Length: 119
Image 1 (cartoon, rainbow, N blue to C red):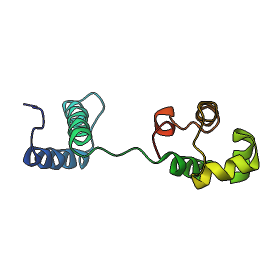
Image 2: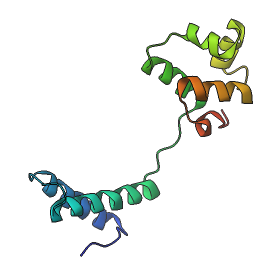
Image 3: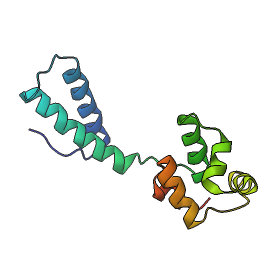
Image 4: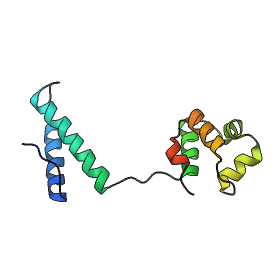
């Protein structure tokens, strides 16, 4: 019977069970595939509660996204406006404005909740 994960021992046991299931050739819509899906959801919920991943710093997120999209910092000038503004933003001397946050969200697909954080 499946139960919520309430402590570290149950978490470890659930991870072991998921590992066992993943070693099998599971057919879609089978009892094992349903169990694997449910256990994955339970693990995710436990990890979100006990091992939360902090959101990245807005400036790190911008730089990371530029790198992911294979864009140079020069491309950021097109989004933010002036070259000096880009330099001030990336150095931390200037904070992102609401307009900049909207443009970064739209053009680079960086979540607004990441960009609005204090830094």
